[in-house]
Amino acid sequence: MDISLYNIQFYSWALLFAGFIAFTLALLLKKFTTLSARVLRWLQLSVALWSWGMTLESAATTVPLKTFWSQVAYLGSTTAPVLFLLLAIAYSQYDKKINQRNIILLFILPILTIVMAFTNNWHHLVWTSIVINPETNIALYNHGAYFWFFIIYAYLCLLSSIILIIISFRKFPGYYKEQTIALITASLFPITGNIVYVFNINPVPGLEWTPIAFMVSGAILAYSIFKFHMFDLVPIARNNIVDSMNNGIIVFDNKDRIVDLNPAMRGFLSHQQNNWIGQSRSELPESWENAIAGLQDKPDDHYDIIVQKVGQNTYFDVQLITLRNQKQLVVGKLFLFHDISKRKNLELEREKLITELQDALAQVKNLSGLLPICANCKKIRDDQGNWHSVESYVTKHSEAKFSHGICPDCRAKLYPDYTDK
Image (cartoon, rainbow, N blue to C red; front, top):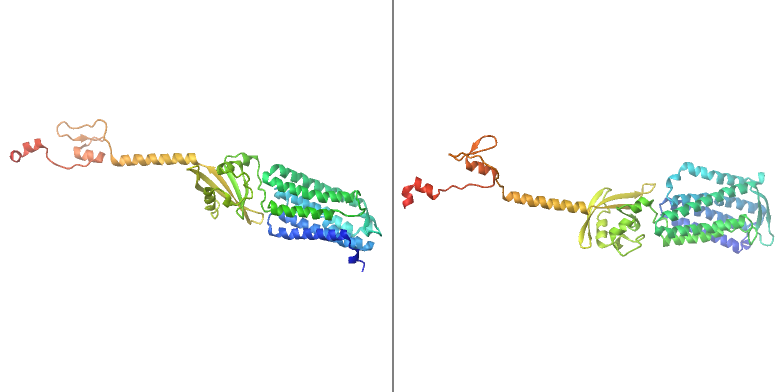
C-alpha cells in the first residue's frame, strides 16, 4: 500500500482540516435559500474536494498516485474560480446574469482542463514532469503550456469577482459594507496562496497553500454568517432614487428582522436608534410595531393606517409587497409608506363642515326675496304662475307648520256674542 498514515505530515493534517471546514460550511449553508448562499455552498464543496484530494496527494509516495490524486483535486481547483465569480455576481444583485447559457459558457474551460489533467500522460500540456522530494515527500510539478492558459482564465474570474464585490461595497447601505469587507478579505487569502504556489515564490517548494488559505477564508465566512447574518439578511437591490424618495421603505425578512430601510423611513420613525438593520420588528416604536403587525398577514394591496406621532395622528397609505426568490418562496415583505396626513386632514375638515351645514339645514329653511301676493285674498304666486294659499306655500318652502286659531279682531267680527262674554 503506497498511502500510509505515517506519511501524512502536518501539512496533510492541515489540508484535511481545511476540507473539513469547507464541508461543514457547505452543510451550514444548506438552510439558506438565497442564490448567493447556494453558490457559496457549491464553492465550499469544491474546496472540500480540492483539499481532500491534495490531502491524499501529499500522503502518496509514488508519482502515479500523486498524479491521480492531483487529477482528483482538479475537480475542485478548476471549478472554484468560476464558482467564486458566480458568487460575486449573485451577491452584487446581478442574478439575471446567472442563467443556464452563461453557466455552461463559464464552465467550458474548467471541464476541458479536467479532461486535459486526466489525459496528461498523452500530451503533457498540464504537467511536463513530476519529481518527488525524497526528504519531504512533496512533489514538484513542472507545468505545461495549457496550465498557464487556464491560470490566466482563473485569475480573470477572480479579478472580475473582486471588482464586482468592490462595486457592491459602494452600492450597498452601511450595514452591508461590513459583510462585504469580510467577503473581500475571505477572498484574498486563497488568491494570495495560489499566487505563492503558481509563481514559485514558495518558502517550501512544491507546497500548495491555496486549500489551506481556503481554511482561513472559510472561518471568516462562517463568522460573517453568524455576525452579520450574511446570506440571510440579503441586500435588496436599491439605488439613489430609493434613498432620495419622500416615501418611506422598510423591508423585513421571514424572521421579522429589518433588512433595509431608506432615509425617509428613518425620518418617519423619529427614534434615537441609528442602526435599524438587523433589528427585530419588536424594536420599533410601539405605534409603528402595532401598525406593521396588523398588516403582516394581509395580501399585497394598499392600506390606510394611523400612527401616533408626537401626540397627534399621522396618516399613511401603505403598499404591501411580498418578496419572493427565484423558487417563488417568500423571503420577506416590503412596506412602502406614503404620508397622506395633509390630504386626510383636509378630508376630515371638509366632512366636518358638511356635517355642520347639514345640521343647520335640518333645523331651518329660510324664505327670501320678493313674493307676489294677492292684495285681496292674500294668495301667493309661485314661479310657474300658480296661486297658492299662504299656508300651503309656506309649508312647501319651509319647515314651518301651521296651527289654526282666531285672532281677537276676527273673533269680535265673527263672534260678537262670544266676544262680549
